[in-house]
Length: 115
Length: 116
Picture (tube, rainbow over the protein chains, first blue to last red):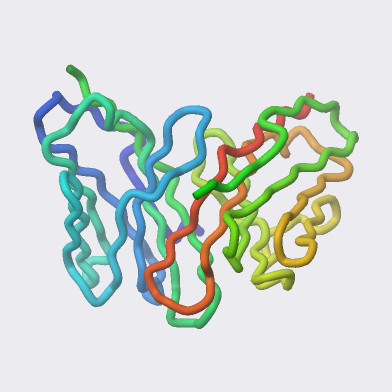
């Protein structure tokens, strides 16, 4: 049972345009959501997060939107740059349970930004 | 600040052999995780330590996998005996883990294991 789903295995966009990566989740106990970026042969690196008490969090070119009623979040990258080409993982955590910060990951979306 | 260190980077072994991976988390981080990432999948948590105690090992195949965290710092993950389906990247991550709400996990570069 996959609790975090990224239904698009890949996405290709032109440099300068917007990239929108989507993520759906099924566990209503999740209260903290993260996006990680992964280059080949490297570990995932943290990009941006959002807690369930918010519906938007912005950091430079990256914005994450959360729609709790739809159990859906999205990552917007504007403008997209070739260096953004990587695999993006959506992850979620149930932090209301105390000290267990276990992350559940989606399968990832490969973003390719074409010059 | 030094990141999460893992070794080795790559390992090739034959099935039924044993293998061990090592992880040194970010200094001061109380929580340490081992994740398994099979090609085309997202990372899957194998085991989570809080200091030197196990918090979650529900997805660890305990008949062949074992892990320990000595003195609440470094950790080793062992597979004995390995199977072909254990071929994956093994990622170690750490987080401050105690207190606070917005504490993300920081990952090492991973160990790519190939079982032949």
